[in-house]
Length: 75
Image (cartoon, rainbow, N blue to C red; front, side):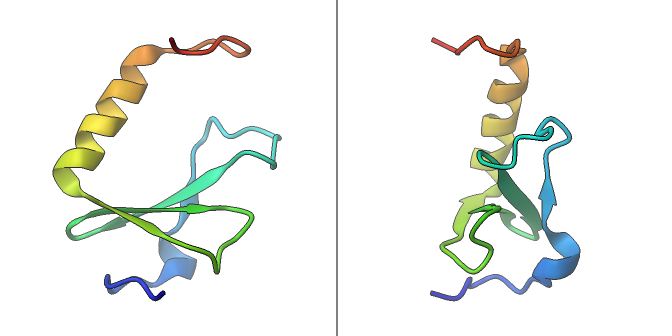
């Protein structure tokens, strides 16, 4: 299914600076005028999740506030 957002994926997709060398568990994100797109970095032609701007902002804020250390899960 094609994304309803107009986006040049090759220019817009990015990985977190925290993704490190572990290439088995990474997502890529792309900003849009209405929010963000999220996909599995190993499957760039696979499904894309579209997230509205307000929901994306809350998600990023909450994840940032966790300040996780490697090997420790958020519970």
